[in-house]
Length: 263
Length: 325
Image (cartoon, rainbow over all chains, first blue to last red):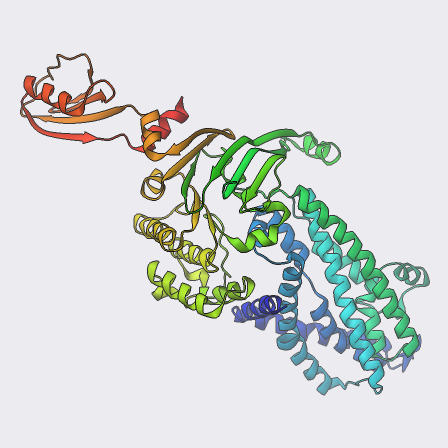
């Protein structure tokens, strides 16, 4: 455990090296929140609520989603693929560690950096300007945290599995791009699923993507009852088991067919 | 059972030859023909604890593949491998704890952090005890002359400095075995000699077993006691450096500088003049049929010699000759 915490810390630390890019990220997050707030205010056009969603809910959604998206972003699929393609994966496999935990810790370190030094400052600023509400019920807040935690695990598992595919294909694929599209469409990260047409909403119910981002925020905003929140968490766990089985199966294959490329 | 044992080990890869042209690229999406390439072809060897073994061969001979199988990150197609009683690829993590590996072409350091930070990480990862860690860091930093750059981020280090740091990193947890895959590639003479000194020193101090692949024959001559040569995945030679020279190079070159620019007078058929370059003459002798002293005595009787130099066959020439055959 200690080792992986140290991996997390190192990847967190590494982020501090490039100050210019940190400022650019900060600026872009500011702009994103600012644009979203203005677009949605314009769409509401003075109305109090649309489909039972108040403008205040929407503003809360925008602010909290900045934090959730910083926590649920992952590049691990691309990173694994790049390492497989150029053979650097050998270095990771030579260490007496669990590869998956290493990859997770590495990603989490980056995400925590993004939360603490990027999303959080922007959110505080936005909350001061536009107003922001915390859940009144501590039960909902804790359910939100649990649900968000499992949401992170789900997107990490998916991206990890996508990364493992590169052991077979021996090529880097635009996986991040593809996943981002899927998560944006079926996960409700850009437009909340509240506003989706019925068919599309039905489809999202059969996919894991809404469980990553949209459902935790839904719980945070108190738009579901505690018992509904519990059942969402159960569905998350079911998905995690499925993803875990897939990943175990792939891993056992990799152990026997692993080839490391290049010199 | 020897410490490191390979028995009839073969490793085959599938390679997908890429065809030219857009139509073929499209076709390859559906159907991809492949060929089987045998990188390692029935290799046997056993290595005892504390040996310094040079593993040589041309590019693509199967050296790196062997190292990767020994370190447990490649699974052999057939044959048995055992390293200190473990099958490496079945016990990857446990095996990893006992070996140190340096790939000349890959760095294990964190790119943006000073090497000290990577050292800390390895301390935790390999559960190195604090006293041993401190002692090793001190010892390696001194031996590899790294004082001036321990605190500098990796990206600002030269290739030679990075390689030294990687060597130290591989040895931090006192591994029983050190695999070095082209550790001196692309380095200047000074860096090379530091690395060679380091390898000899840790072998003496810690009795680490070292297997080293290289293209620089000076590495072998200065470090190794034993040499294994492979070609096209097959073992060609396994023995001491001395035996290697005896087997593959039977001639010694005598270089003579004469007093005047005249043709060299040779009366004995066992002396072969291979080149005449003004006053300088090159004579090749086969030590198995004539001794060096006899040869020079004879030459001195028929010629006015100012200076004599003897050039022992160097291993680089020898290897080149073998591969060119």
